[in-house]
Image (cartoon, rainbow, N blue to C red; front, side, top):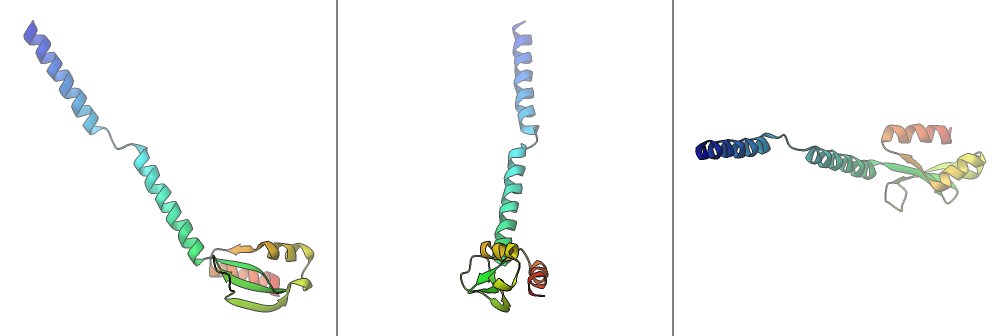
Length: 109
């Protein structure tokens, strides 16, 4: 009887150990990986992105995080509708060059 209990106990312990080793990795690692990828993408967008805003009364393009414009247009912000001029005071985000060109076409044409 003691042998049966001992063998059953050992089998039970080995099943528990084997089961815990074969459990797939939790979603936490996948979530961390996805979060890291999202942060990397956001950082890249900030690095590559642009902001279109008013600069001394004209529409200007700034790289994200920079204080000096990379381009200043000849279009005066006081010639625009008040709602557009207000948006430009706050800054209009352009994540890439294609978006930047579209925004400039909207405001400068």
